[in-house]
Each structure stands twice: as structure tokens, then as C-alpha cells.
Image (cartoon, rainbow, N blue to C red; front, side, top):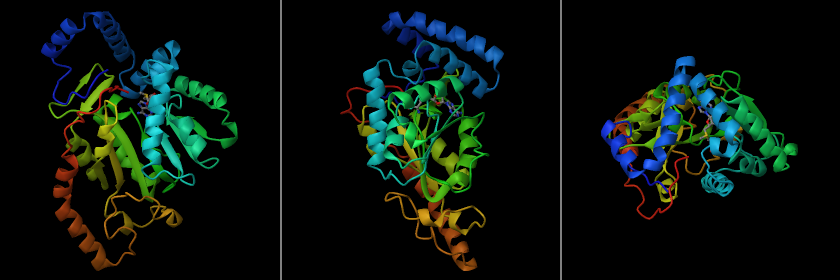
Length: 328
Ligand SMILES: C[S@@+](CC[C@H](N)C(=O)[O-])C[C@H]1O[C@@H](n2cnc3c(N)ncnc32)[C@H](O)[C@@H]1O
């Protein structure tokens, strides 16, 4: 099983050649993927349309493989890993949850089971995987929980209400996304996030050069994503304890930045306040705005911003104890 390789540039020719020599059996499959990549890029120049076509093709083979699990046992284990982590990091039944890129509900069915009726909202760019998600729902007998499963064209969340979701979750989505898609998500996710809400996402991490393999797998430095979140007024921190789990990606938690409490008309749901024990809320979060206080908060935020970004970005060495790592 793959381990985290934090320095490789998988797009480099030398890396590819070495990889092919070490794993000759994997070359034909890669060539097939490369051929499909070229064809789909020609037909679908924008990334979302491209990746939707990838998912259509993969889902036709096997929905579980399409979300990255090569066996049903791995599908169950990966769903359990996501659920257990989130449940031990603040997810409660009364929370309202938005899952971005919910796939065929690998983790989603566990979230739906845990949450109050109607509190789960799953979105995905692939109608094909959403059909498979409906099959999962039926298999698990969760119809009465009335989750919402909706296809989307982008990550602007324009059709969703302000300040509604306590928890937003995206597993193995940004690992398949160019920076423009992540930027769009960060630009809009704050609007739908409740005041004390949080957004957890995984990403393919590199400590070397940022790169991508075909248009399918993307690798970012932690500081790139932390800085991008901050550009949109969000706070981001690296989740160290996720590194101990046998998973090939890393995790970041995003919350509202310190300026959020001062912005009027953001549709905050005050009753949801104080729900997240680990939220990175500063002392000003939730305070009623007064001009002096707002200026002070802005100054403090500015002064601590670079130090905080550096701290958040200083990801630890990958867990040497983790034996079995998986990519998705
Ligand atoms: C590797 S699968 C993971 C699915 C699910 N999160 C899980 O852990 O089982 C990635 C999913 O994200 C979806 N996806 C990719 N890019 C997306 C985007 N920009 N917006 C919404 N969904 C996206 C794909 O269609 C696919 O279902």
C-alpha cells in the first residue's frame, strides 16, 4: 500500500521512468488512463466537465472503485475512518452537514445515520455517482433520514442558504482539483458556514514542487492552501492527528477568520454558536461589533496572520508508524 511521499514530483519524467521500472505491471493501466485523459481534455476543456466524464467512465466500471476503493472492505474502512475522525472531532447529531463530493456515500451513509433527519446534504459534480449514492441509501435502509443528494456544476453554493451548515466535509475532492476549483470553494464556503462551523478537507500533500498527474491527481503544499483560505477571510489549520491514520492524504480544518463576527448581513445562525470544541475562534469571535473593537480585532488578526499561517503550514513529518496508506 502506498505511503505518503512528500518530496516526489510524480509529473517529472525521471520519476515516471523510475516508477515504470519498479512497477512494470502498472504501465499498461497508466497508458490507458493517459489516453483517456487526452481524449477527455480534448472534449471537455473545463475541469469540472472533464472530471465528470472521468467519474462517468469509472462509475460504469465500479462505483466503489470510482471513489478510490479497490475492494468493498476498503470502501467500508475508508468510510469508517472519515466518520470516526469527524465524530471524535465535534460532529453531533443536531449539526447540519454539507458533504462536497459525496460520491456514492462511502462515508455519507454513516453521517446520515448519525445525524438528525434531514440534516445531511450531499453534492457532487457527477450524476452517475449520485445514482450509486441512492443505491447505497437503499442498501442501508436510510430513506427515512431524508438526506438531500444534489448534482452541482460548480462550488459557488449559490442555491444554498446563508450560515446554514455547521459542518462542511470534503474527502478526496481537492486531491482531484486544480487550484481554481479550490479558490472558488474558499471564496463561497464562508457564506454557507454557520458562525462556529468548520470545513474539513483532505488534500494530496507535497513538501516539494506542486504538481499534478494527468488532470486527475493534484499535490499542494500546505502553506498554499492555508494562504488561499486566508485570502478569503478564513482561518486554516493543519490537522496533525489525521496523519496518524493509514491514509495517503493530509487534512486541513477551515473556520471563519477573526473578521467574521463584525460583518453584517452574513446570515449567521446564532443558535448554532459554541458547537465546535476545537474551532480556531479568537477572543473576538462572536463579540458584538463596536468600531474600536473591530479595528483592534483587525490589527490583532493582521499581526498574527503571518505567524499563524507559518505555524499552520508547518506540517509534521508523515507518520512513520502508519503502515497501510491508501490514496483516496
Ligand atoms: C475520490 S471521490 C471521493 C468521494 C467521497 N468523498 C468519499 O470519500 O467516498 C471524489 C468525489 O468528488 C467529486 N468531485 C470532484 N470534483 C468535484 C467538485 N469540484 N465539486 C463537487 N464534487 C466533486 C467526484 O465526482 C467524486 O464523487
